[in-house]
Image 1 (tube, rainbow, N blue to C red):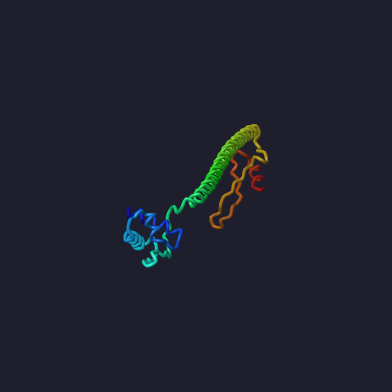
Image 2 (image 1 turned 135 degrees about the vertical axis):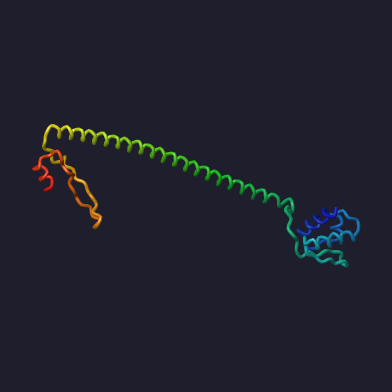
Length: 189
């Protein structure tokens, strides 16, 4: 019962800075002035309000009141509107985040598909190059078997690193199947 009386006192003090003992006695349903004073003293000691009691005038002069979670019925409507606004903004943020997640997922899937198609194309090009090079090697071998003198484009060169100067030198491949005259021509290049 004391807590209810204290909450009633805080609610009344929130609206007025000067409260009559009679008003407090009616609102809190206590029978004596001594009980009203005890409720005020308990509220002051609890830190819920700062006030002075004037026993001669029968008033309580309130200088500060601790806020309550629900003050009056008119105070609920703005809180409800504020919370509804917050709820709407939160819903908009969630929908924006969902759309961005969906965009990122779509973009990632598209990038994966492009990467896979590029890998397939690259593999096809590598296969084609290998097939062409093996055909060219076979043709060259067949041509070399038909003729003792190799064609000019068939003479291959390779590069060897000189370890002292770290420069690449052009060195001809040794030709073993060819006559000395052809070997001399290939070295002269």
